[in-house]
Length: 506
Ligand code: HEM
Image (cartoon, rainbow, N blue to C red):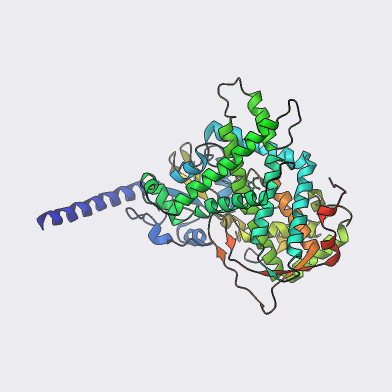
């Protein structure tokens, strides 16, 4: 009895000491909810994250505030001005990624997304330049996107205007585009292998942001020994890496001396060769495999989910859908494939695609950053190794920047003459040196896929459904909850799908 009383008293004393320590530590950070030992700010945030969770907290604590995960502080930046000042003025200092155990498992400190220091810098610089080259110079890539769009049109057309769930067909098309960029268009990937690959990518991305991930980050050694969904993630990571490794081996075997690089692996193998005498090089096969895994992880679901939201918004805004279709009909030459350059003539369609991205807000809080040096920001001292989160959602919905932030309104991207106008606040791809590596590829994919679908179909709700309450499903990529729509074919366009077109556009 006496011993248990002593234990309880000791526990309470420890809690009090911990609480006082937390109170002391939080003085230097921007304000925020009082952290409680072990649970941090969870009592205020709750388990369920919503799109406006951080925005609501900003109303109570100011645009820059601190949340605590256990006893780790996380500084949150909200609103265009603060995110811009934070990430752009401190470009270098906020260039780190926190090496949480789950990120270590995903990236093994290699590649781009979950790497730091020289490895990240080299791989990011090379990856970005190579993707840009492939998009700009490899006309084939645009041709392949068109070909995938044509296959997608055929898949939807087979349903003959009956209700369909577009999500898996969109995932498949998006992953085929990454396959083409990375492996080349002449490497046939069997449908079954591709389906497995996209399944495993989904398993990994869905685990991110889950309670399982938090538990894994707090107790990585323990979690290695207990069953649960994290075990499935381990085997999915293995599958993805070994799938890519096999493709790299094939490229090495087929490498013909002096042939011009045609795809990402070719470019990368050539870089390994160029730097083989440099003892500090980070170009090696481990990094190659991880960069490719990052491209698949970051470049498949983001595209498919944006297009899903796009179709939904067209169904809910038939007037906007009609305007897009009219513009496509009156501007495009039906004998030519759609190219990314056509966006310069298709002002309204381009504005609609940007508005789909702004309004769907699929990457709510971006990926967390780590201060790699002490930082003085907004009158606060933030020590090295502090986590910083930029709430991209608060930028894309910032009432100080957008005329009607809570409405789907393509005019946000049109000037008074109806011409497309770029907006600085369009932070859907993040900003600063950790901003999206695949922006250019993403923009061309979204443009070509969306324009091809709009040219071929009118999307509407199935018979009897007037209005559907499609709720967002939170996660690292925000999905719409499963839905069905009808793709009603415009006969001529479907029969002349881009796969049958021989005239390559530039
Ligand atoms: C609609 C499509 C996409 C959206 C909205 C998007 C958005 C983002 C965002 C918000 C970040 C984090 C930026 C930060 O930390 O501040 C990011 C990072 C990244 N994205 Fe994308 N992305 C898209 C498509 C793609 C595609 C197609 C690829 C590859 C081909 C790609 C590759 C990457 C990579 C590798 C990173 C990590 C960059 C780094 O850590 O330095 N993304 N993306």
